Length: 121
Image 1 (cartoon, rainbow, N blue to C red):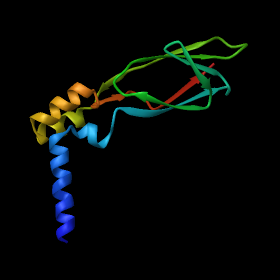
Image 2: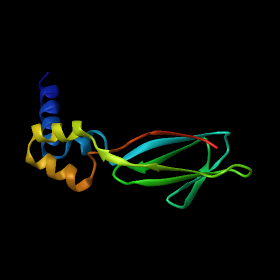
Image 3: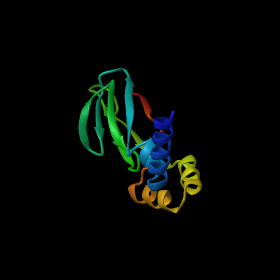
C-alpha cells in the first residue's frame, strides 16, 4: 500500500510539473486515409505518402493539405486543420500555471479535426 501511495504522489507531481496534454496525449495523432475507389495516391503537403488505405502519424498542431490522386479520376483536395482541445486547456488551468506554459509552448493541447479522412474520387 505504501508503495502505491508513493507512485500516485509521483504521478501527481509529474502531471503538475508538465502539461496534461504533454503527459497524456503527446504531440502526434494517427490519421487513417481511405478512398472510394481504393488505391489512390496520397500527397500530404505535396509529399507522396503512399496509397489508400493508409495510416500516418501527423503532428497535432499543424495544418495539412491532402491530395488524393488516381488515374482516370479527378484529384480530390482536403484540408486537415488543427484546433485547441478545450479540455486540455481546462485541465492545465486546474493543474497550475506551469502546465499551461508547457502545453502552449509544445502545442500538445492541439488536436486534428479528424483522424479518419475519407474521400470519394
